[in-house]
Length: 110
Image (cartoon, rainbow, N blue to C red; front, side, top):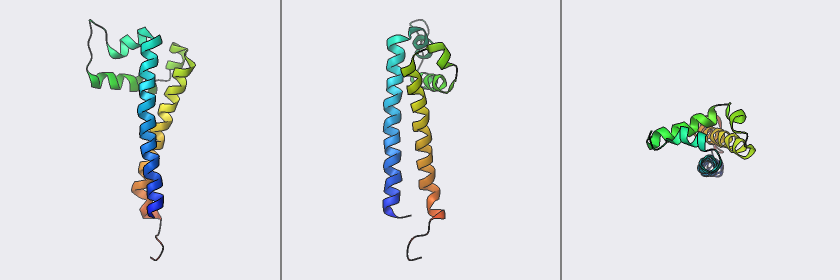
């Protein structure tokens, strides 16, 4: 695999990781601002505390659960959840292309 193609996939992966982090923060902000019941269920309340890993996987479970479209009713939050799924898929595809691409692409001069 040529260096230009590898750099393209690497930059694509970095871009998708940056987009993933930005969209994740957007989802947390939207939950905190307008959906206090869901935010309390995911992040905990004053009587029930949660650690950081539990909060992270709570948000991921919320995103992967397809019922969030009906329970929330917020089109921006639904779009952010779909964007997070797409950014995850793009990151995985770039990683797979970088790992297994050299097995299928012949370099010039070989």
